[in-house]
Length: 70
Image (cartoon, rainbow, N blue to C red; front, side, top):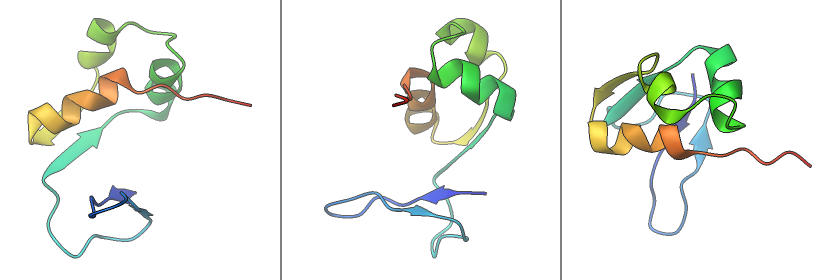
């Protein structure tokens, strides 16, 4: 489990539970994450396999993320 917490100047990624309860929780299988972040699957097809709890407007941003490998 990883947590992303918005701060004034950054959004640090934590490997432990955040101090405050999460505003949004996103669950997706690792195999889907790889395909989604490398644009190997379209947004609509991925959305059907992603579970978003809490603030859906925040969670839907996961569908537009892109990973760049060097």
